[in-house]
Every structure is written in C-alpha cells, then in structure tokens.
Amino acid sequence: MTPSLLKIAITGIVSCLFISLTAFVIPFSVGVTTARNASTTGAPVNHTLYDRLLKKYVNEKGLVNYRGFKHDQKELTKYLDMLSNNPPADKWSRNEQMAYWINAYNAYTIQLILNHYPVASIKDIGSKVQIPFVTTPWASKFFKIGGKDMSLDHIERSVLRKQFNEPRIHFALVPAATSGPRLRNEAYQPDKLSTQLDEQGSDFLNNPAKNAISPQRASLSKIFDWYKSDWQKSNKSVDYWVNRYSSAKINRDTPISYLDYNWGLNEQ
Image 1 (cartoon, rainbow, N blue to C red):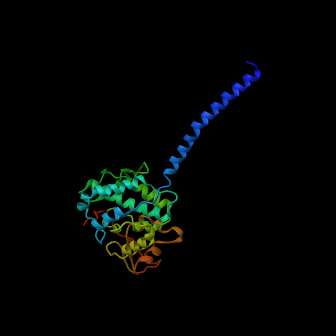
Image 2 (cartoon, rainbow, N blue to C red):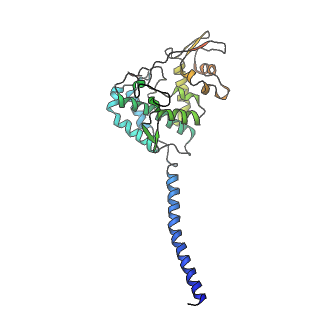
Image 3 (spheres, rainbow, N blue to C red):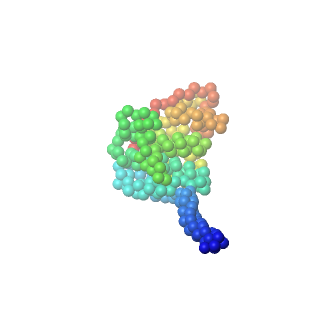
C-alpha cells in the first residue's frame, strides 16, 4: 500500500472510532443531566390529603385524636410517601418550600407518635438516656426525603432555621407536647402561609396556659428562651415578638421568666 493510501485508511479508521465514541458519550451525558434535573423540577406538593386528616383528627384546641388517627395511618403514609418522593425544588417559591417543611415536620411527628402509640410523651420514645441532637426522638433518622435519611432535628435546625429568616416557624412546629403551639386542624398552604403564622402567634401568646403576660411581669414559654437567637434576628427582640401578638403589652423593663415546659402528649 502506498503512503498516500495508508494515510487515507488510517484517517478513515480514526474518524469511525470518533463517531462511535461520540454516539456513546453524548447520550450518556444527556442522561446524567436529565437525571440531575429531574429531582429539581418537580411541581409543589399538594397538601389536600394531609389537610383532610387534620380536620378529621385534630380539634379546635389543637389536640390530636391519636387513637382514631391510628386507623387512618395508611392515609398518612400516602401523604408522607408523597413528601418523601417530592423534595422542594429550587424553582419553588419561598412559601411553597416553607409550607412543605412545616407540614413535613408536623406530619412526621404524628407518624412517630403513631408508631409508638400508646405513649404518654414523645420523650418516652427511644433511648432512656437522651443526649440532645444525638439520641433524642428528634435526632432519629426514621424517614427519607429525596432519598436522604432525615430527622426532625434536620428539618428544624438545618432547613427551616438555617435557610429561612422566619422566627414564626416556632409558632407552627408542634413537638406533640402540651406546652407546644396548637396543631392547626388544617395544613399550611403557600398562598396563606403568612396569615396562618400570624394566627399561630396570636393564639400562642394569648393562651394563658402557655404564656402569662402583663405589663408588670411576663412568664413566657421556654421556646422564647431556647430560640432566643432566632427572635433577636434582624434587630428584633423577644419583647418585640410578644407585643406583636399579645393583647397585654410589655416593655424592655418588664421582668421576664420562663415557664416549665410540659412534655405530656397533646392528646384529646
């Protein structure tokens, strides 16, 4: 074979190899990109199923009929499976993401109670020696969201508190405790989230069993002590949040103490 013919043959072989390799690599690359984008383009979750369950098993005082809820646990599981398989996407609005995470926290808390019911307190679940953020019920990774092991602590601390500058979440997250905020008998919805959080704040601050407030003295819920750094964000203060919702007002000179927290189950 002459040098010219040999050169032509080699060039043809190289061209064929390049085309074959490209045919393999390009579809593979597109597949990876599509898979990556699929997890970030889902539509916001519909909370209707959860809303229906709350209306059925939670009364106007925020107390839960866990015994009755137990009979509908499969329906709750359907909702939780939907949450698990549809994590918030970047394109979701801030309120869509917040409503998702608040509902997730409260719904998974209900599931945790139902999984161990009957129980007198959420703190009776799990290890007898409870180390904060390590062995508590809130630290237990008993569910998945988007394929990742998840805990209630993670939702509260690493998602809601870290990613959103919104102290009012503490009026909405319900740890299944008597001293906690009222569990609404409706789901949180993106289009009315701010109104719902304001209603929670007013309900919580004006409940004498959870906050005893007068101009002379304020005995507040421990959540104002535990999450003081959240209440003080954006140059706000605890007294600012109290006065925003309480019918009785305080000032910076009003002595503040904190009530004991009752971890008894928020049961009807």
